[in-house]
Image 1 (cartoon, one colour):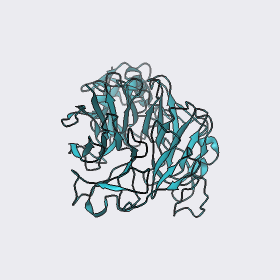
Image 2 (tube, chains in turn red, cyan):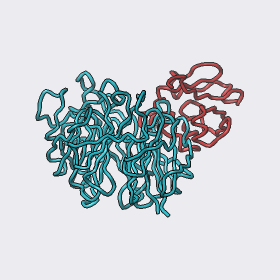
Image 3 (cartoon, one colour):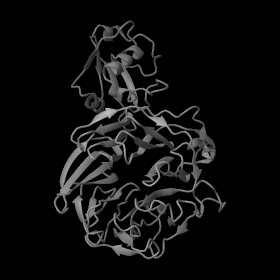
Image 4 (tube, chains in turn yellow, cyan):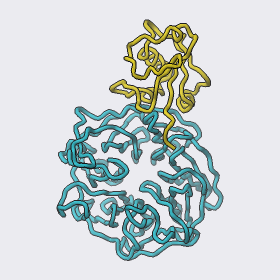
Length: 98
Length: 371
């Protein structure tokens, strides 16, 4: 299972408390994790990635193991600690706005 | 006994205010979707329990929420707004071409007859329609394809399609307005469109006969007389008696004819309301006095309505979608401010009182009259 931590607004939208746990088929990458997330929680489609381009929305970042993975290719493998459930994959909303 | 439900969209969530027909005691529920910008929410005239809400933020983009029980519970429906074909370009603020990019839904207009059909006016300006209760959205691409799209420019608030008026006497006819392209009309259900801006004069447009480019802020219509339109333009209050073919200025004795909101009395088609705002660089009322102006002659002759409204030190704005009327025998008028107050008048504007006064900045107000 892959642990995913969403920002508060998306937890409310998905009606989940705390972390989400996802079964991910095949290699564990940003793309496969987000595909699994959107398959389990369709209301999140378009809120993290653009519907058409599938690019990360500008005010969001992806972190794991205290590293910013936002600019890694979407098909790059995520760290082993994410695969082994030792660490979560984090979707972080920018601290911005009012 | 009749009831009134006021739907309020704010910068940080939606609120629903309810009262009986007396309209002197109000119950406030919300916030719904707390922390999100709710540009607009509106109920279906065909099924008052069916509500649609536009929910967005800069972080997470656009969502559409739907309620089937009058706002007690909500569920997200489809939020995929994709322009038809090649999106193309419009003019940017500096006049250079800029790609069309979806940003948010400004206005949701449910069909007059079918609760599952709803129109969405979006930024960058386009019109979408759902015929399945919001499960899927499709652009009515004839509007942008009419030819002038590459010349449209955004106003200060973005290039938004903010007004959608459905003609109750002609299912094929619809009016929309875009800031700052102008007003457009379709007579074939949205397949084809043409600009209806003859008579509008805008200082920032050198060509007095310009077909597009006018910063229309809002248009209102009385359901019994859909060929008569009232417009609050950036500057100027305008009127058309021929479904937008031509416009005449009816600003008359208003203290300023800049403003955003305009609406029509539910039972008197010649009685209209505006909230004059000092100028386009000072988005607050003149002299610190919050005054609604009413004309009972379809424009030109205006009276200030002040009873119950702050008459000193008031520097709020009233945005384009933040005024609405109920249809009780004594017509109620409602408006919301950027200071978070929602004011109501149960007597057609003669007297006012706050329904609630400390909400986040109000973006939109809609009213449902329930039997």
